[in-house]
Amino acid sequence: MPQVADLASLQDYDDILARLTADLDEARADLEDDEALRAAQEAAAEADEGCATLEREQRRLEGEIDGLVARVEREEKRLYDGSVKLPKELEGIQLEVKSLRSHLSDVEDTELALLDRLEEAEAAREEAHAGLEREQGAAREKAERLGGTIARLEGEIAATNDGRDTCRERLTAPLIAQYEDLRRRKGGVAVTHLRAGACTGCRVSVPPSARKRALDPEAPALCPNCERILVGY
Image 1 (tube, rainbow, N blue to C red):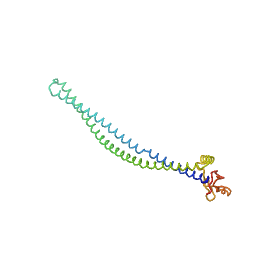
Image 2 (cartoon, rainbow, N blue to C red):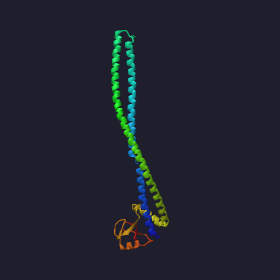
Image 3 (tube, rainbow, N blue to C red):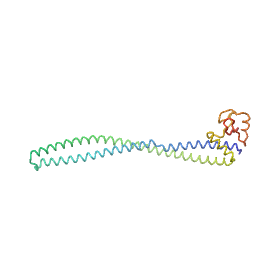
Image 4 (tube, rainbow, N blue to C red):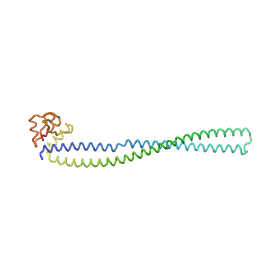
């Protein structure tokens, strides 16, 4: 194959590789982007912690209630079992029982209010975990879909690289060096084509003499304006 045609093919391979690599990077980034899943995980963890905090408070209140009930029973027993004889002491026990019962009632009211909050928190926890399950399912589906896309793109990149390597092997070292230098300096585009008398790289009209040189299949011609390799066919 003529050297100029090989240079044009090499540019085509590099253009394809650039597109495939960009698509692969996008697919990998999409696969790693699990913001929705992380948010669902955080919401579920927060709901779990909210319930756990209320449950700990409930256990504390139950313990306090049990202690108060035991104290009331103990004081009432002293009040009625005849072990205390002095009226003043009996009066003191009565006041203590009254105070304990008042405190017990307050704690029981607090527990009832807490149970309402706990019921709401448990409902929120159930909803959060349902949301987490949905996001986990979506993440699995996305991983399966993108896994196939990534595998396909990796295969296409490997095949394109093989074709590119074969193409490069037919080119001389000076031409490869010229091509790579132009790609580096010209935004990845080293080879352009002549279309309607103009260079497709810079869109500037090419003089007749340059157009004639661009038709030579073995001697690369340069666009007089952008200095890219200009292919006339």
